[in-house]
Image (cartoon, rainbow, N blue to C red; front, side, top):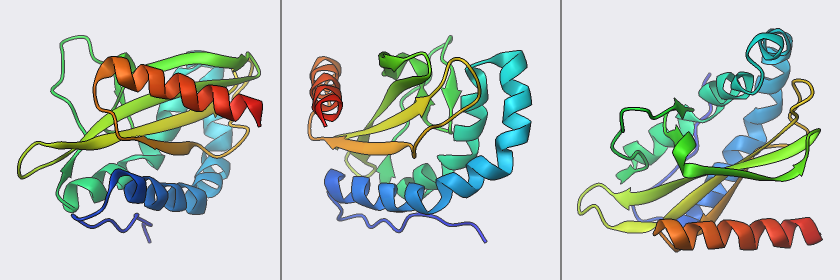
Length: 167
């Protein structure tokens, strides 16, 4: 049985974030454990790209649910785009926090209503990971921003990371 987040067309970005975190919390560890041996071997060959293989299994259910509820999370593709998890673009990510053993990469997706293409906000996906071995030390986590412009998103990510580093 495939678990998917339950989303509705009238949800706010904050409600989508909450439902997405409930979904991730319910499935991330089982997927991680099921894929651990395979991804540990893959990490020896492809390093950080092994985390993309994991996100390819974890994230599509969220993006499928968004689409089914009447939202868009994907951007038009560019020639050199690298996509993981169905809608996570490397050009829309930052990795500046943590040690080599516990790094943090934040991806962002501007979420729009399909019917009028109006943005409702931005969904951030944080993937904690190690550069030394295959390890995801804690659950990936979603955050929400009402901002949807690139510069404001970067400011929002820095604000969130500074706040989480203080706790």
